Length: 114
Length: 112
Image (cartoon, rainbow over all chains, first blue to last red; front, side, top):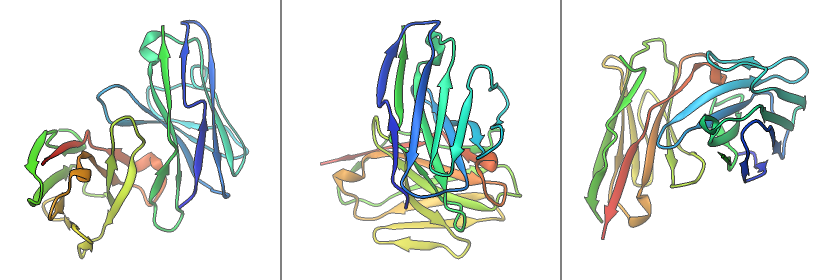
């Protein structure tokens, strides 16, 4: 499986600011995704990061709040904009094996908004 | 009805015992099924895919019942290190996370 890294691993931010999270994969992958896991909850898909085009967002998530970049097949960023305490969560990127459809997750970014 | 339902537990099981989890899904068009394991404050890690014929990996056995739309995970000879949250995941599309739905997880505690 691919090796996935995320930066930062954690951050504490003030409300109204923005944070950009980076996801790096050690091999080229077609499908890359961003998830959120709020305290005590399961994972919720934010968007699919498409290489060379705009991300595909799930219901309840919008580009202005969560802009995503995917400049190449090994890298993506997720920005959490104009943060509020409700954005406190773990943000995870994942990649999909194109043959098995199995997904592998990065270590996550733990965000706390004060 | 929730798309993927799991008993949240916690399941408190003595070391060495056998424990089974079930998971039900609502979308009959679901095509791929997985069990993930998530340790506290860690990312989910793929435990095993679930195939129509059932599959086994060491102490772990997964089974799929399409007619009843449920998936099971059996853990034999449980170890202390098996303590974790087990996530049932269903993919409705042929691939891609647009069809990926996570259950809320079943919390397992193995007691010495």
